[in-house]
Length: 366
Image 1 (tube, rainbow, N blue to C red):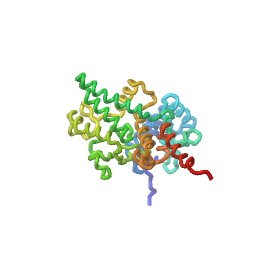
Image 2: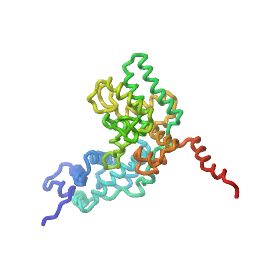
Image 3: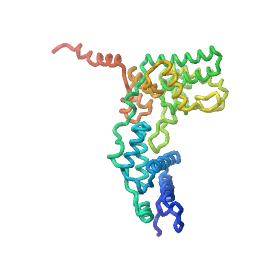
Image 4: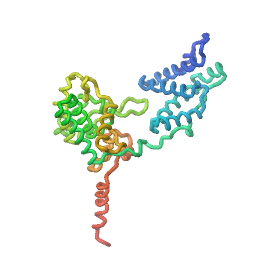
């Protein structure tokens, strides 16, 4: 029986008997083709493989060296650039480091033959470059900015009132943007009312709404099926069902769907949030409108669209909702993530304190 050649092995990617004009570039390209074949054989999707390949090519450009010339020190230099110049979040940098580590492990794995091929061709061979001492350790399930916080109830009311005022202003001025202003005002109510992320919100379709037998009073808007939840790296988006809990938010989206959205003239488009040109609204547009409203109101700059999601968790907690229920609603795998999202007000803490010590104070002495 012949020897089995692994998908992505050097022997399967390198062309024998051909003299390359640029042998170093040909070897690097063959490595990336092999890595793609190896990942495909493991069932990974192109949407996962292609960003990884771009990252490796970017690291090649950064170092101006080929993979068999890399050293661990290059990873430290690159990480410093990601931190100090590009100001990326720790979780993002770790993700990049993980992808680089996977490629490094692939080309240094003796089963794939790249070490031997490089040593024969160039007298050098690839070595492991990502170690515990030069990469970011996974210390916590949540690594958002410590400045991130929810809107207080007063800030939230001001923000949503201001969004509604933009509809009235555009309508009084008979401007074309009245429909878009109404859409945006409703969109922010949905972000808060169902505790959504920007991307989840932008990719909602009309068909994602459904009835909830436990809340028949909400009709066809009793349950929201989120199809594009935050994914674990290398995995497809995570889906979840979010139960409607705020009647006023249900009223707002009902009015938008039944009376406003049809006026955009794109009845056949599946998206919940459509543009005046007949497309789907994009996450950066959500961010831009939020920032415009926030700055117009003079609210703190650390507030972002994600702060509305923090507000949802915090306010449900203050209202006494079960912690496990909130965790399922927002799609957190770990309760620790939900805990970090929670920033209860001092009034809530004082009330909880009185409930805790009240029985003790009321107990008879002795």
